[in-house]
Image (cartoon, rainbow, N blue to C red; front, side, top):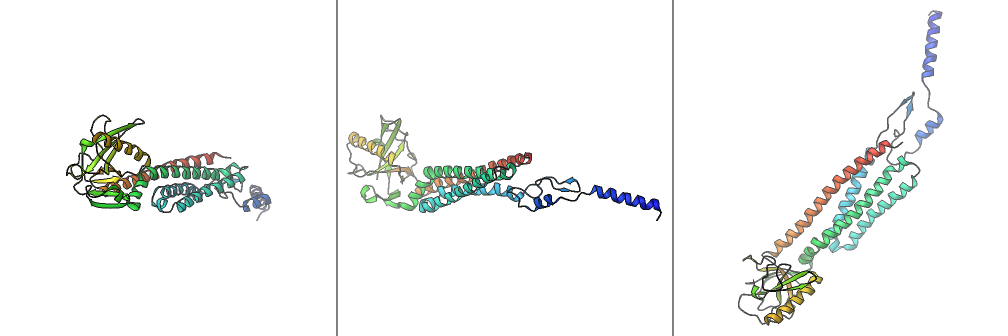
Length: 328
């Protein structure tokens, strides 16, 4: 090899040597340190040969921040809305506290990494989304339970189903545990119906008879709110116009029961009749079917809220990803 060629080869080698800069010891130690939640080793630019690797996103963290809060919402909603709360309220409360504790732990971790905005970003998001999921799930679950499911469970599980009840033979005191009642030849005596007005509402009552004339005691009453006037017998509550309706769903509201008793007392004075232990019912054709429909309404509301929450969760995680990408 000629002297000029050797010189040119050495010059090229030196040039390559200057192009390559090995990583410093500090950079090597930094790469070995554990990375914060929501990051990978490539979150900060990694240098090799003077080139930068783009930041990457931990998909496991993103998936966790989407699914775990949504699952918490589903479980809390379910626990506070359905039969677990009715039969085992302490267990239902324990599930809610478990997810509330998870949000608290995440909040502690977010405070620990508070000096690093990128490191604490997903902790803050998880804390906020979990807190909202548990709070909203608890609120909606309680609403669903109080207004729909509780009465359905009470009627089907705590109280009894009576069939073939003759109001001319049975007395209210004999059926204090009745929930669903199918009357034998039951009919409403609309001529003796009456409305009692109180607090802006009209509480309507009509005696349930067996169609055989006057009864010595009227202990079974069909009731409703704001479905009659307080001046004349015009009861239009429940399935009053259904000729096949001969059954009742027991009224469970203690607050309304007080007003209906006052209405019965007014009917006693107006129509000269007697009621010893009045029981109040919503007049229907098939009480079991009515309870089933109410439970279906509660399940449909549950499914709607689950889908709506998942959609909002997707939007929230997407917005958080964009914000994370803008952090230094």
